[in-house]
Image (cartoon, rainbow, N blue to C red; front, side, top):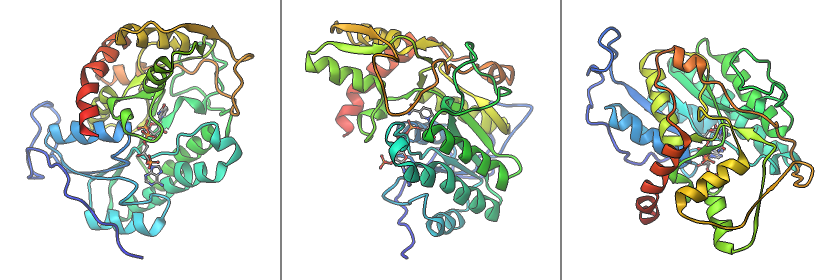
Length: 322
Ligand SMILES: NC(=O)c1ccc[n+]([C@@H]2O[C@H](COP(=O)([O-])OP(=O)(O)OC[C@H]3O[C@@H](n4cnc5c(N)ncnc54)[C@H](OP(=O)(O)O)[C@@H]3O)[C@@H](O)[C@H]2O)c1
């Protein structure tokens, strides 16, 4: 098997691993090499920009360059790059498809995390891995904390929870970040897109749009999730953190906010779980509490309206990039 080709990637303004970051005077930390897996995804794109902007030496690999489900590729690649940190933003996110085809979800969300964790262990690299609000059953009726016991309702959630467990099984101190309803301007280019782009496509079709009002989550803006990931890494924090959008909102209300921010007024109708059946069961209330993140000194997430304003400001530039 041929080793993966590693493209030239944007480097930070600071190349020396001995350069110090000025942001944390009492915890000065050398800038080091970071490898971002899944760098073509919504979050991966933002992580590339965020870490490069902070002066880290960044390498990003997308699916065409490395299949994280391939143990040999992962080991070879991580050994060749020898990063201090590996950030795994790659994932299988097709929640409904995973119900009838669970194997690909397990290959990418669970077994691939084992591959990455083992490879990190071999070169003494630290791991950041992302998980989901769908590890919960949605019965708590309040934002979930890191202490709440997970109980996923479907194959996707089970595969993501298994990924968390593999990270913990092979590494002493992984950083695992659970997030919810990720949307970023990069979603214009990804196969799966995001909820904002879906709403815009439906609005363009001219037909009435029905969105569930009885499911609540914390839609999370990818650039701000990337920034808080970098904050946690630079503070040397590990363990489990929830980083959601900071505002529990129903998908119906989120759709309303999207159309308001986009200056559109399609016919939007509320629906509910009973009327709008999906293959996968989803938690009804899966908002995440950011209390632990905030207690660690990270800035709270700004309001969702600000996130959407920023999204629509960046979107035209993204669409030119192709
Ligand atoms: N999106 C959400 O609503 C949401 C909600 C909760 C948690 N999360 C978690 O947040 C993280 C980031 O999600 P995101 O929204 O940025 O996802 P995304 O936009 O779908 O990006 C995922 C990336 O992973 C790549 N990938 C899939 N299989 C791969 C493989 N075998 N090897 C290498 N790369 C592979 C995808 O490539 P292809 O496009 O070619 O498949 C894609 O570029 C993930 O861990 C996700 O589970 C997301």
